[in-house]
Image (cartoon, rainbow, N blue to C red; front, side, top):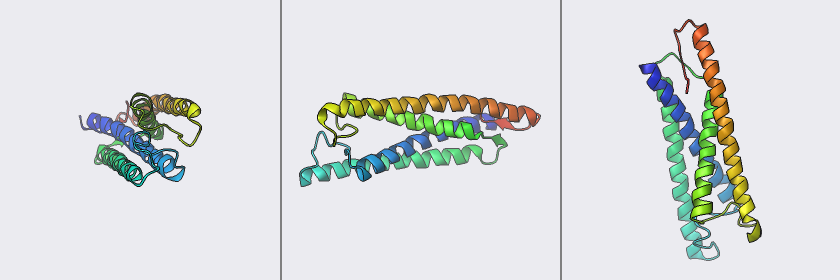
Length: 175
């Protein structure tokens, strides 16, 4: 029973860690370094002090949420492997990270870019090109999600083989 709980905890931990890391990458690289957009830059333009203040707050709350996902994912990974004989495949771990990151991109892209329109991926590009940047972001997310699911399946097979080779004395981290 402990191995089953640990396996699920490891998988969800990897997905949450990927979700958090994907959000942190988005916030740090796209919001801060490239400055393509901010959290609510289509609602509150960054051309005024009040608008910049609102966007800075929005970005900060966004970063805080993604940080929480990252910490919770890391704690779940740690807790899922502590005190057990759980075999964790690297493919399963990387696959889970990609599933989380891809899910972040898809949810954030559909909700914030398409449905709410609070910002778009690259607001420094001409407005007529924004849809292409948004669609590219969604395609990147879908590719990470599908690639992650494929890696998780491969990791599932790999860990099952390790468990069988070890004579069933170790539990595999299968999805």
